[in-house]
Length: 552
Image (cartoon, rainbow, N blue to C red; front, side):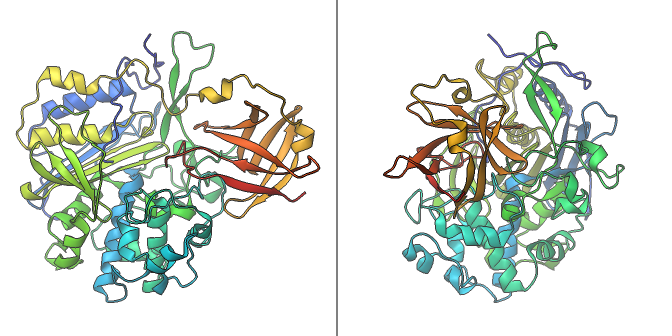
């Protein structure tokens, strides 16, 4: 039976199938010059199917913006329209800015791609001393560490230094040199840029990329337009009760900034609907900022695409050397995933470059990257041999509708003059019957426990992990809850053989196993968190057990 999505004030219809595949994952302007009724029709239909409040698109061809257009609204239920200058969270497209910034400090002679990272961060330690001595700046940019962690998902108040400090406690998940998508490695690269340049990451990216490209609606930090009190500051953190969200949380409500949205379970009173569209709290995470926290507009991103398509030139001025641009766009490690498989007559991903993915689409060479963060989805794809690039930004959570990349490929078909039949379009829009958004409650949180579990009173107390810091187990209405900090809380649900499942509250209700440890006298001395989970993703970021020791 199909999942039904409740109609909201945006007036969108709700039947559809999910695309179920991950995809990549100023100047002379002729915006909207080319007729694109088929593009408009496709985007309108996809937005209605997926309840996407707003989308913004820009296309660059031969160093000109030939198409720039907004669709829908900045916030569901409000009249403010999206246009090509509306700012969105761009998620992991930020990684390409980070790599571009690194290329600039290489051009400055302050960093070498193949120099050890510890030359620039002497305090850095990985859990494997060999990796500490041999990991290079190139390994960070190309995701070749074999390491990622989940330092940012539970604990608020971090910064780049906290990720550097935590790296020593992360156990490798793959062989060094193998592709392992790593927010941790990207963040450490950001710290290399800071140490080499003498500027904060925000100031460097702003002064060397954002301002020279005239990106007037781009922000290196949410603090530019949101007060800190109105931000949730880790991935699974909730916003303190009573704080404003959406446009009401902006310092300037007239600012042209889109609002994060997600699909959440509908209430019992909303008959016939399983999910409804909801404005999500703004969030920021300083501990992984270079990995995914920039905001930008489609028109601003078009300037950035112009820089890359022109191999480092912008309006006749060289910002990055051609040699370093070739490095950024050249595959450094092979990837096996096919990120284009859902799109008929699609292509494949060949490798990860530095901040970019390389591949092909319908016989054409591509350099691309996707971006997903809570409430947003973005995609940039460039066709270097056609001197064309496409930017798509949306303000619906990437795990509710991973559709930005789909729009970019359909737009590519139009501007590359590749015919697409109506039947093909319908297949692209379709989703499987068993689709569920990220807000769906994990099955583990509704499982019936078997075996005797320790009582809430026995496990209550304070605990410490070198990797994740302090945590506390408290008793609420007779039941235990695991608190990483006041707004990052998980209910401990009895599971099998005396263990528990930590079921996090909030928009993304992640589930993690918890097993308590005992001394010889059968006294609880700690717990093991996330044991047995593998694979890096926001909902399942653990690939190692985290040991907590009881301290009180």
